[in-house]
Structures are given as C-alpha cells and as structure tokens.
Image (cartoon, rainbow, N blue to C red):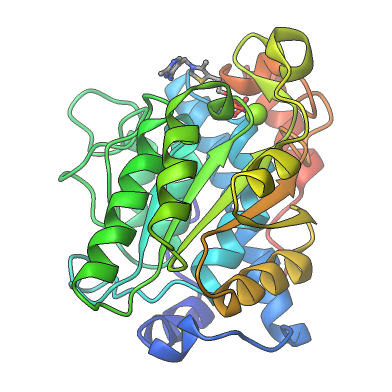
Length: 304
Ligand SMILES: Cc1ncc(C[n+]2csc(CCOP(=O)(O)OP(=O)(O)O)c2C)c(N)n1
Ligand SMILES: [Mg+2]
C-alpha cells in the first residue's frame, strides 16, 4: 500500500524549496535535517518496491541504490516550486539513467509535484508514470530519458543556455556506470569543460551493475573518477548512502568555479533488501509476491 499523504514536515519543506540560498554552499546538516532526508530515502525504497510489485515489471534495484542521492539533492539543494513546476527560475534535474524513474517519481510525489495516488499507476497504459520518464506528462520531469547518454547531454545544453542568458540556476543530472559505457557522455564531458559549465553537477551511481551483469564483467569502465578528472571535471568521490557525505559534496560543488562537477557515488544496487543487493537480476525485475513481502519486512516501516 502506498502511503497516501504528505507528512506535515514535508508540507513545511515546500516553502524552503523556493529559497535561492539553497544554491550556495550549505553547512553540514543538523540531526533533524539528516533524519528528514533519511526518512525521504526510506520512502523512496518503499515506494519503488510497491510500484514495481504492483506493475509486475520495472527497475527496483537502481532506485533503492540511489535513494540517499535523490533525497539529499531534492530535499536540501534543488530550488524548485512544486506548485509551479515550469517556473523559469527553477533548478533542473535530469534523470539520465531514466530506467531508475521509480525513485524520481517517489521523491517528486513526496514533495507534492503530483498526488501520491498516481504512484500505483506506474507503468500502466495511459499513466503519466511510464517505465521511463515521459516529458510533458508529469510535473517535475525535465526530460524524456531512457536512451542512455542523452540525458547528460541535454543537461549540459541546459547549463550552457542558463549561462548564456545569465540565469543563476543550477543544473543537475544523474548518470550511471552502465551509461558511462556509451560514447555520448564523453562528448558532453569534453564540451562542458570547454564551456566552463560550473553550473552543472552530475551524480554518478557507481554500483558495478548494469542490465546484463556486473559492469566489470560486461565491459569494464575502469576508474570513472580518474576518467572524469582527466577530462577536466572537478571530481569528488563519496559513499552514496552517506547522506552527510553526499550533502557535503553537493555543497562543495557549488564553490568550484570555472569547471563542471562530478560526484561519484559508490552505491549498492538494491540497498536495504538482502536478495536484491548487488544482484543484477534486480536491475530490471519486479519482486514476486513472496519477495515483496520479504522486502517490506527487511526495509521496515517508515521511521518516525
Ligand atoms: C542507448 C541505450 N543503449 C542500451 C540501453 C539498454 N539498457 C537499459 S539499462 C542498461 C544498463 C544501464 O546500466 P546502469 O544504469 O548502471 O544500470 P543499474 O545500475 O541501474 O543496474 C542498458 C544497457 C539503453 N537504455 N540505451
Ligand atoms: Mg549501474
């Protein structure tokens, strides 16, 4: 069962989301903020399990692995207006590894971009919550993604446009180790440095898993942190499940001038559910009824 309503604390957060000082480097999160982000990450995991189980298809592993990355970015950094999702002054987030969209849909619903009652329609015919993000149908989705490599390039284009027009907005995109096997991210890596896109920040989900197995077996991508650094990016490497560390890296990225930022987040696919963890099967397989029950038992209810 999808929890139907927003908690009062997330209702209060809506007003915070509009504050432009969220674009500045931020102090460490106090215990209350840490708790709030971790709670939102837990909700992402519960929602991703619910959505993929109800749909009997989809990608649960990525959203579980990226839960802290997404919750930290959306709750503490992006400047957004859920009541006016196409406000030109907003920051942008592009989910370039689009198959992990159950996590994006969860956090958008938690922030009130659309009613949480839509979540159970995930992957159903006619639903705005398609198996990959669909542009123009769902508030908060900035780009249709799923064709790996495209999203990061579009994000770079958005950053270039923002710079050219003097807009103080910041552009974020997620990417993944599997996506980094494509050629397109590396063209973007070159041009973003050429154009000094210091308003662009990528978060890489480095879990060593992709559609057909472990990345190092299918096609090793080597040391991605070193590769991005060699292209001229400001690279930070963090434990992607450590909210304080992800937050600190997102803050530090804002202070880096003259070049784009890459935050390499070491994560575990399927984090929190034992049989999903680091198991390539759960890149793109929904939990069965028994697996669903076990996942909810292992994750436990939303903490207070
Ligand atoms: C251009 C393109 N080629 C191939 C695919 C098929 N595909 C879908 S997901 C995926 C693997 C992506 O790896 P990653 O994002 O690391 O997966 P995860 O960690 O979420 O398991 C591939 C190859 C695609 N979506 N787009
Ligand atoms: Mg991966």
